Amino acid sequence: MITKLKLDRLAGLQAQEDLLRLKKQELINEILTAEIKEQINAVEVEFEPEFQTINNNIDVLSKAIKEEVIGLGESVKGSVLQAVYAKGRVTWDNKGLGGYVISHPELNQFKKVGDPSVSIRKVG
Image 1 (cartoon, rainbow, N blue to C red):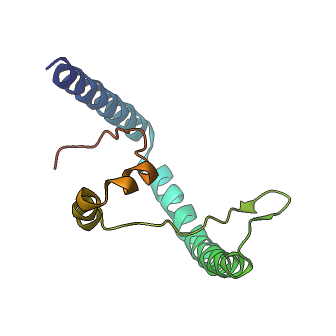
Image 2: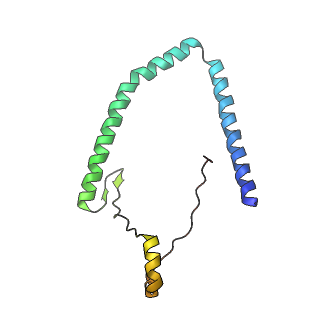
Image 3: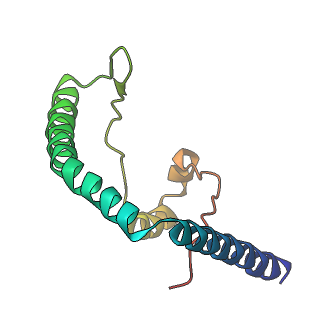
C-alpha cells in the first residue's frame, strides 16, 4: 500500500514538472513576436533536408556496422564509438521445462534465477 502511495506521489511530481514546462513555454511564446517565430520556422525549414540526409546516412551506416560486427562475432572499438557484440540470448520454454524437471529434478542444479528488476511506466 505504501508503494502505491509513493507511485501516486511520483506521478504528482511528474505532473508538476509537465505543468512547469508548459508555463515556461508560455512565457517564451509571449516574448517571441510573430516575426521572430517566422524567422525561427524558416531556419527550421532550411535545415530539415540536411538533418534528414544525415539521419538517413547514420541509419544506413549503423546497419552496415551492426551486420559487419555480427559477421565478425566480436566487438569493434573506434576512436569515439564502439560496436559492442553480444551473443544471442539462449531462451528455453520454461513451461515445458518446468514439467520435465518434475520427473528429472537433477536438472534444477543448472537453474539460475536472476535478480528482480522494476521499471516505472504509465498506466495504460
